[in-house]
Amino acid sequence: MITLGLDIGSVAAKGVLLTPEAKWQALVPTGWSPRAAGQQLIETLTKEARLERSGIDAIVATGYGRISIPEADKAITEITCHAKGLSSLLPQVRTIIDIGGQDSKVMRLNDGGRVIDFAMNDKCAAGTGRFLQVMAQVLGMDVSDLSDAEDPEATVSINSMCTVFAESEIIGHLAQGKSRGGLIAGLHESVAKRVAAMAARIGVVGPVAFTGGVAKNRGIRRALEAELKVPLLCPEDCQFTGALGAALLARSLGQ
Image 1 (cartoon, rainbow, N blue to C red):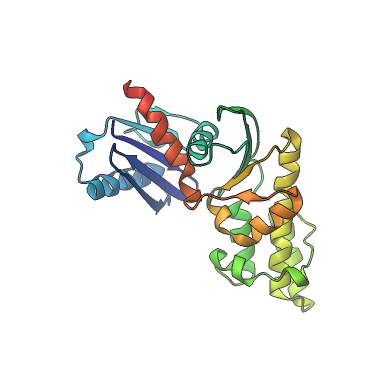
Image 2: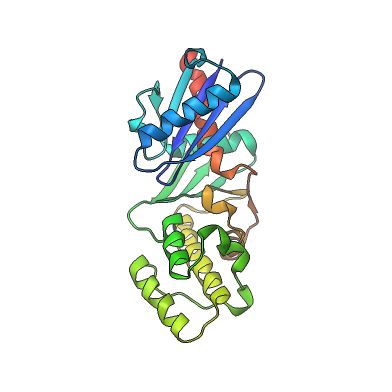
């Protein structure tokens, strides 16, 4: 079968196209229209694979924009898709931490890779990529530069988890002459504490994997490992695990 998985996140839309011979993947900004982002992914991936749209046997959409994709044969929650995708890459994993643009999730898996419990933060920006993006703007940086600029040896604790209050707190620290690298390390630790507390509610069983766009931030990985006291496995294509899981689940639609 030839299947396509689309993970339409709040910040980025990811697609994975699977054929019997190969895998293609692409990422585009979601922008204001999840539907347009999904259509762009379909066009990009079919072009790269030299396929017609009619050559795709099944499409599964996931992510917050999954119901906006009329081309999809089925919409499946990101919890299920992330578990499927991650288990195909790292079958030994029993806990998944996924931090995206607007929410963060912790999933517990059984020996068969199925979700047996999960916790999700989707009511507040704290502990998400959006929180880091806002804080990077306050610091006059791009969010992708935070990891390299942190200074854990000079960590400045950030006590406010609310984005608005944390912004004011950082501005105050900057006015006092606190180092930017120390503030960044403090932000990383504040996100890690929030996510670790959520993980503690369902229990952390190793091995543990870290996925989502924020997993590319080495400072967050460092802080999370310190909070959880376990090493984190991070797939090379950590942003694509949801889309991969959707593509794998799409195979069952044609059977």
